[in-house]
Image (tube, rainbow, N blue to C red; front, side, top):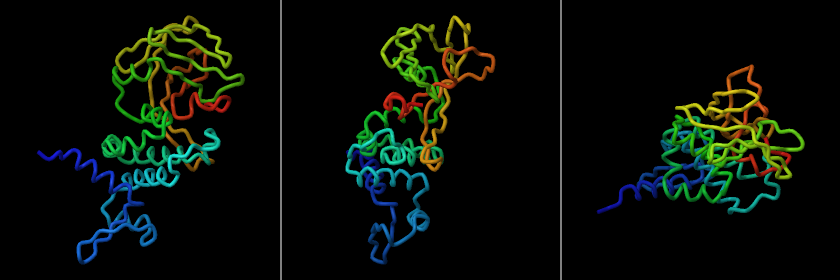
Length: 249
């Protein structure tokens, strides 16, 4: 029996790897790809490729061009090609969430993107979705949350498997803050200074390169304007958090 799922995955992967997926149907039925023959808009129209598929194709092309090299400065986002990949994937997810997720989850494409390492894993956690208790539990368990705008010296908040919430500073010293539990689509934080506080997970944009590019991060935030939080609202999990020292969110 032919494995049609594998065949579909291979077709998706091969078509996206073609730069901008420019498809030219010649009279003999030959299909070819070119970087220069058509503009990106024309190529999308003539190949039947959607804008989201084009963006995923560009992301895969960028990985190939950089040959999986490690950026000199991982926290210089404007010059870090990995964040260029995440920016294109984020824009694709915004245009077509379901279609892009299907492409990304196809085995060959996923393996290629997973080669980016932890930045892709954290981005994958942060993309928009209908959050349920299972997804929230994965996001919250043994996770480092960084303030969107950190202060010096830097510190972060850890939500641990045992339900505890702890602040950790750059020297590794810990301060107990309270506990967390899941209630439907909310996370309930019990903080002595604030009482029982409902928090919600949202996917938000993090802009870089003077606002010309952005990628998704997961934000843990409250709508309450009166809450006395022991951290700056919101807390963030995303590709940059935990990897850039003083330059974290």
